[in-house]
Image 1 (tube, rainbow, N blue to C red):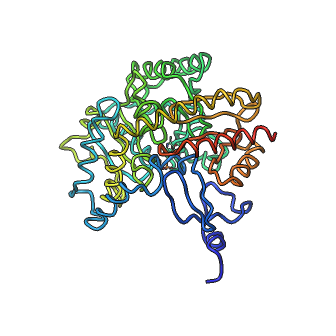
Image 2: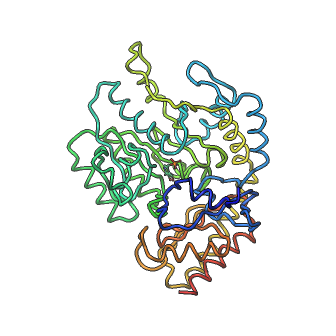
Image 3: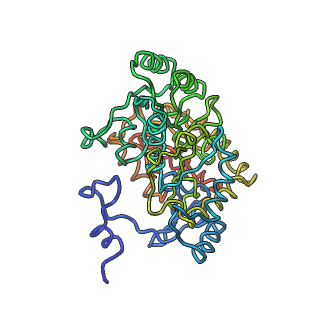
Length: 422
Ligand SMILES: Cc1ncc(COP(=O)(O)O)c(C=O)c1O
């Protein structure tokens, strides 16, 4: 075959979030190591966004690879209804106690979107099973919960979802409480709702794809407290912020109001394998226990609880809970903090913000995913072999915890260079 990998890919593969008519051939990657990836021409790239926020411990981590390899040679898959296995049990036994709130049951699925679907279905069926008519779901503007229909319904209506608007279910949207004004607007909207509230779905502390918008714990708590008082179920979508991205293990750890349901993926396996998990409090689970078979949670996927993915998650948990990882996360936070002071001397860098190991800012006023500057920013980092895929004119760094000081400094310098070039 004479064609290059890039050509073959471009000829046969339809890539995500990509206008195929407008892009060049993709860059074939051949290997990964720590915070770097090596392309087919031998160029070493720094992964500044953990490959879509997944690989928290870096690429091809030997500890995760070893457990995955052992598992795949032992039991690669088994139907998960009526059967179970050690990796899933170990994961549930170890993860549930470290989750925020009183999480008692873990339900597996395949990715972040399905973890969210499961969370919302648990919430709606909870009310159905206890014979209460509550169907109003609250969600936030600028939120993103995935690309399946339920997840799209709960996310902000945008140009991305426009072709599907006629098919999405209704949700009551509140502004994300990033200031007093939006907080009060949100409270007002809740007070005006006439129908009983089923629940609220939220990205705790940071709205990722919506532009790395950050809110203070107290402000989100005020909204959640209000929803709780009205009997609503709190569904935390920690798909992006979970597993040590913020200052705490889970973003909800910084909130007074703990979730009743929590949706997890991405960092769950340290980015090694696709896996989703939705965990819930005892009272949610209890509502599904009945002699009536129709109260069963009729949901499942072919690969539910895949043993290899669960093994990857157990290995990733070993690394996450290792005190050395906490030190690394703290070190990144301190480095980001110091970088903030440098960034502040560039007036074009607006709304500089940080939460844990994530730092973000806008280039110029306002934030727009379709900002024309976006391609210029991306080309700048690409030409330096840095993966820092901006969200419109929002630049952010979300590195693997194993990133070295030198790699982080290279990213910082490339950012400052870009700002100087404007
Ligand atoms: C907060 C949040 N929820 C859900 C998802 C969907 O996850 P997935 O892409 O694995 O379906 C994402 C993905 O970016 C996310 O950031």
